[in-house]
Image (cartoon, rainbow, N blue to C red; front, side, top):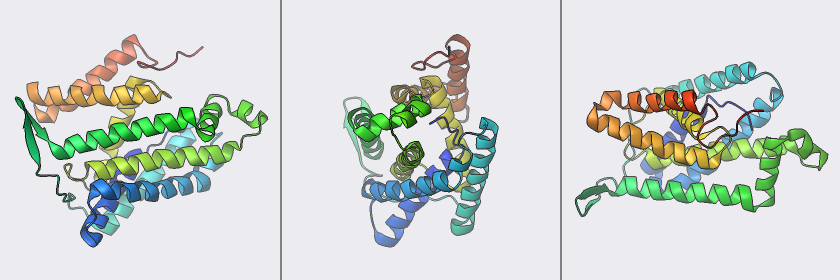
Length: 257
């Protein structure tokens, strides 16, 4: 929807903390509790869009960036106040489960997370391309004035789209919480990684975001193996520079003009 959400990573951190609360207080495994985390973050996204973003949706991008940076700081400091600065990790029955697949050592928790992520991506694709609301969202993103002309409630569409984005990142936070330690300050790194993925894949392309995510994850894994774990981002950002040099619109993005 052409809104630069710099609070994306901090929303993911709140998804992690919600999964942690569900696991510690109610005993709900994060691989089941991610549904509740997604629902809660959908409401958060809806409120942020209706109460804040909707007021400046037609303003220059600089105002959007400042607003979302402010939201990110509020979310980060709210998490710091509520949960403290200590790193946390969610316990799950799958965390210690592994098996051998030929010469490969497979982590069950990561495999399940990947499978659920693929299923959610497919569900999002089917929603956007196979439902009336999804087609309206794509129409509003492509031409908001044209969507208004045909009778679409563009403000409502924007709110739903923002809520869906927040729900996806809430589910993502819950799904990675069993094997990634997290703390309130972890949101910035997640936001930077997400923008790296979107730029590589191409702005506005769902397929591009999916492929970009795979490329960045593989690049960082190879960097950790062949260089050092602390230098894994060097490989992914080198990939970003190459994409910007030779295909500025991203792998699946449309060229301007």
